[in-house]
View 1 (cartoon, rainbow, N blue to C red):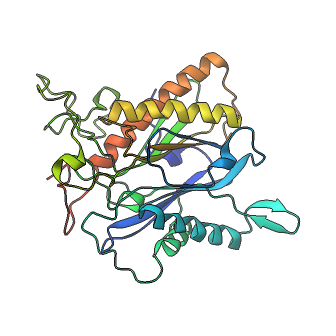
View 2: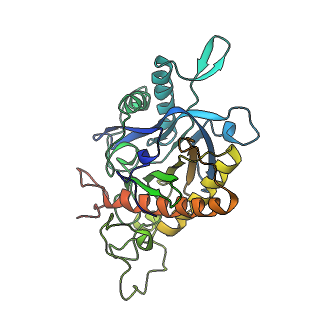
View 3: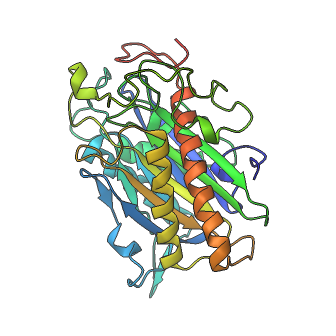
Length: 332
């Protein structure tokens, strides 16, 4: 396995990503735009999710594909971002056809970044609808990671969180990509060190090349949590998209989302807590024309987990310092 050319989710043919953020607000929105409607699924393993249009992604339900996926800050207010994305897609003539109407299908998930030092006095209406519209209009093959988009105001227990992405090209030519906004209750780093839990999966020193600490800290297994450091116990959630150019059914996409959650477990300690809304959307563009056999799907699932772990570490690694930060960046 190797990285894709940009080491971004957009190495998956048929996908683009756009970010929009407000650094005064310390929040933002990231959108994955499907060039053509893509097969989609979702798996929620955290205990405190905030979502829109996730029920339709169940394999037994009618709609098979989506036009875009939204990851947003803002807690429940951030669900407005999907309305902005939907408006931009409608202007483009995109959407599920119902008689003379087209309805853009835009599932969304949010993370809690209201208590992060940003100015949230936005008045009557939140800014997230406009941020969603702007993010969709900014979608392209390359985009910023770290303190950008949905990762703008993200925090972990030890360092600033952020927006991360990574890609993997399998031996059979299928590409897997991940996009993740890392705002975990726990930590992406080991104990009090700067070493990442995801170190065994790192490719080409993409998040510092530090490997595991030697010796391992005696407190490595002790969970580090935000609320133990006087921060809101509910200010959490890691939300992500795993994508591939393989041809998958909705049920297979669901299995891919499940596998990608293993990347959370490899990169965050702890993960999937009752106070995280940990969620993974899965997208399959089918652009490769390759439908994996059962034995190939095992490799695909493993790549989904490792790629997600790398993306999580990159999100923390790439974050930069800004005014009124409540946590240091990894580089500080």
